Image (cartoon, rainbow, N blue to C red):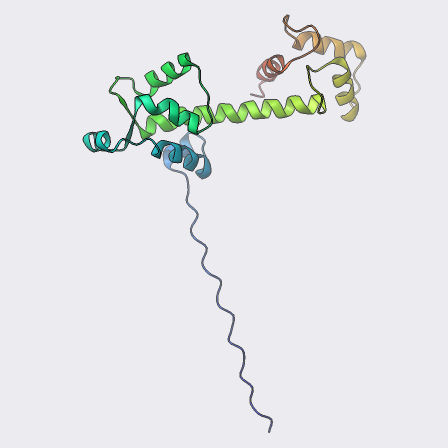
Amino acid sequence: MPPRRNKPPPPAPPAAAAPKKSASKLAKHLGLDVDEEAEIREAWEMFIDEDASEDVGEYVIPTADVRRAMIALGFESSKEEVREIAETVDPEDEGFVVWGRFLEVAALKMKYRDQKAEVQTAFDLFKGGAEGPITFKDLKRVAGELKENVTDDQLRDMLSEASNSHSTSGVDLRDFEAVMKRAGIL
């Protein structure tokens, strides 16, 4: 009889994956995913005022630090906009901001940032990598790529309709964004 061989040990069961966190109820209501909420929370936590939080009974940041927290999130704001944000997040001028109010404003800013990126991406598709406004040549190229049967007069009408009086050479980014809003895309 041949000698017995030891069987190799069975493979170890796969490690259980760590449960994926989900966004809070408020974040979900505001249209944020877990990563966006985490990004906002990280900026928020850099400015928590421990003493004020103890007095209030929940974590707060000083109203004066809201601008810095927004900058930490990549949002640049004018002085007027910062004043409006402060009035929104601290309506009673208590000098501090609670998490929920900060999250609401940051979510709006984040969605606006995403919207701006979408507009820029769509605009760049029309431009084909070139600089400047969208011209007749750009529209004609895109219509050809999409195999749209559009006359030159129709393309000129589109440019005329889309371009604002401040731009005579074509449709700039601001005009393009306005067209997207009128079309209900934004």
